[in-house]
Image 1 (cartoon, rainbow, N blue to C red):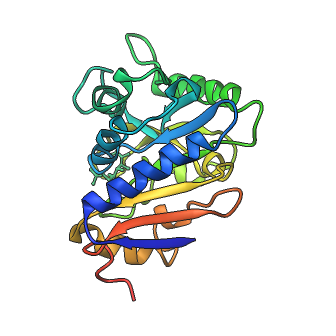
Image 2: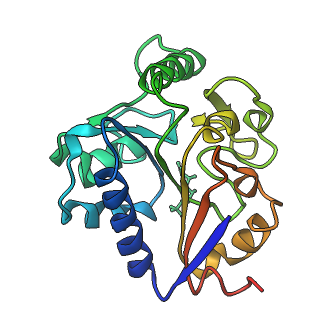
Length: 226
Ligand code: 6PG
C-alpha cells in the first residue's frame, strides 16, 4: 500500500490522469480500466481529455453502478460517458438495465462480460476507486451482503441503510488487479481515510493481486493520518 499526499484535489486529479495515460502508453495490447463512480473522479476524467491517449486499446468498465436508467444523471456510466468516454474510441462496457431485467441477472451478465474481457490476463490493469465518508468503495457498503462475496466478480448489492439497489465489483475481482488507485479529496473523507489505511473499512480491505494499492489523496483528506 502506498499513500501519496497532494496539495489539492486538482493535483490529485492531474496525478491520476497522468498515471492512467502513462499506464496505457506502457501497455501492449488491450488495457482494462476500471472507473470510479461518484463525483471525485470527474476532475481526473476531464484532465484525461487533454492528454494524448490511445483510447482504442482501452476496455473501460464500471467499479459499480446505481440501479437507475443508463441516461440518469445518477448513473456512474452516464457520468463517465458524458465527461470523457463518449468523446474517445475506448470500448465502454456498461451493465444491462431495462424492463424485465433483474439486478442479479444484470450483475451476473456483467461479471461474465468482465471474465471475457480479462480472459487473456489475470485481471484489470488499473482500477480507479473512490471512498465514501462511511468507508465504502464502489458499492461495497458497511454491513452489506457483497462484502462476503468470495467468488463472483460482480453482484447486485442493496445499501442496508437506504435499501437502494446497486451493482458492484467484488473483493475477488479487485484482487486480480495489477494496480488499484483510490482518489480521495476533502476534509469530509479524513476519518474514512484514516480508518481505511488501518484496514478498518470496506475500502481498506481492497487488495490487488500484485499488492499494489495507491492512495492518491489531498492534504485535507490526509489531515487525520499520522
Ligand atoms: C458511487 C461510487 C462510490 C463513490 C464514493 C465517493 O457509486 O457513489 O462508486 O463508491 O466512489 O461514494 O463518492 P464522491 O466521489 O462523490 O465523494
